[in-house]
Image (cartoon, rainbow, N blue to C red; front, side, top):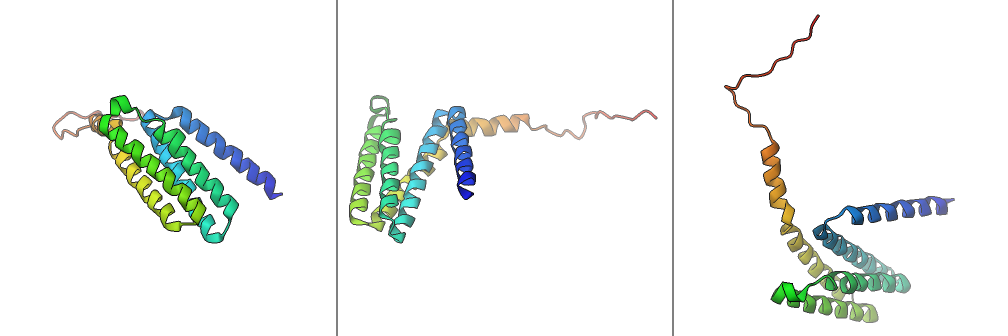
Length: 158
């Protein structure tokens, strides 16, 4: 009975994620990658504490895949210069730490990578290209109240 509800919820979740990906800007896609890796690491921490070795391994593998095939692969080292090279090295370090965390059941390494990803996500969000222009655009849309300007009045006809 619950399997049907569970599979329906999973299908809805998958559609919601796919719709979000299609509609997202490149900047938002990177945020979604950070969110996915962070979620996988949170799951891995819980699974490690519960002794669920198989699930822990799957969650860590998912986080490594997101870091390597998503975040690291999206770096443009020619255009990004030193920042891209430093991020590439950091992503490589994270993947290595996650491999060691998986092999040695090292919760501290999982937490370290989680904190690194959280910091990068926060920095990435703070440089969103549309954030400043969206705020400026919103201010332009807000009406300025001029107390001396004539006002439109509407009277209902009886």
